[in-house]
Image (cartoon, rainbow, N blue to C red; front, top):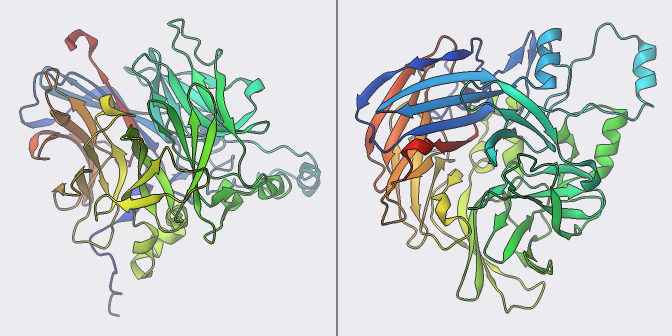
Length: 505
């Protein structure tokens, strides 16, 4: 029988469903090629799903595997690699039961075979649902501590050297926050801001003040708020923007149905079943003034997003750059069933196709004015990163991974000039690079003076991961370190670089 022709022969989304069966707790030495610059001294931490199954149970969505923390330590021109599962409550329950016992974003828990029919009926009227604490998405510093995060208001502290799970933190109950973004903003003074959904106030901006005492969560406070346009259907938000004077919230017409959330108390289902899309409505942009709390709202053509690239003020305008999608199908594309059938699905390429766009908001425009969203570059880009010293400020360059699956590449790294729309790429056959993280040169004179680091997986060798060091100016390779892992090397989402303070001027 003739093999079915693949629509996307160069791309394998299956890399997202690899399983690490053996943690690497002792630093693993790799094979160094060329020379890592002597000023690159620090630790790259990465977070993402570390397993595709537990026992006989298969995870059904890219967001769902148990969180595993990766560590690449660079010192004196050498690099080592470690990885360790985050020991959340859910991880402990799943491993003890050898099955998926808590429902995740796109995966429903497997029923307990020991529960009787009477147990199941009584639980329908209990009106409690166990919420996952699998913080699988990102890693951020809060003061001098490192935390793994996701979109539920739970964070886990991680030891950046041993990768041991240290402490579980919840946002203070008086804030009444049920969700928050997985991408807070860390300010130069160490303060942290995030946007969440409060049952009392709607969308809220939460400030975590860096007071040097290590209790940034205890002193968390709401510093801005605005009501959703649809009370029972607040927008799904994965990130937000910040400028010198404003917090920037994008209210896309991909929403969390609170009615569907209530149904989950009766008929347990994954969180993805609560999402609803309203493509007939425009996208809204909300500015909250950082000092006065005053809010102003605008509209733009319907677009969807996961990640904001950067936002800043210039010439009396707020510029908001983001990776945009035509519809909300990108989350559907991350389901295991969609990935299994992608090679015969002609629509799949459109589902995951993003483009960098800039929303331009004249500050003298009347409220609810329609504002322009223009294309920054005609290339698919996701997991965007910038030189973080330019966060909230005018900037020129962003870096990311390719999102187009219908090209001649397996995976690519991209650098975009946001002023000209020109871009350059790095590619090697059968490679799947992670989000590139920019490290500035200590004597940098230009915005792109530095290197980018990326953790690269290999399509034809699932027991290998490579730390790639590229020149940020031209994406030419400076060095790499190849690591051979004892079990499959899993894909990661987001990370953070911690410079070795002893080497910082």
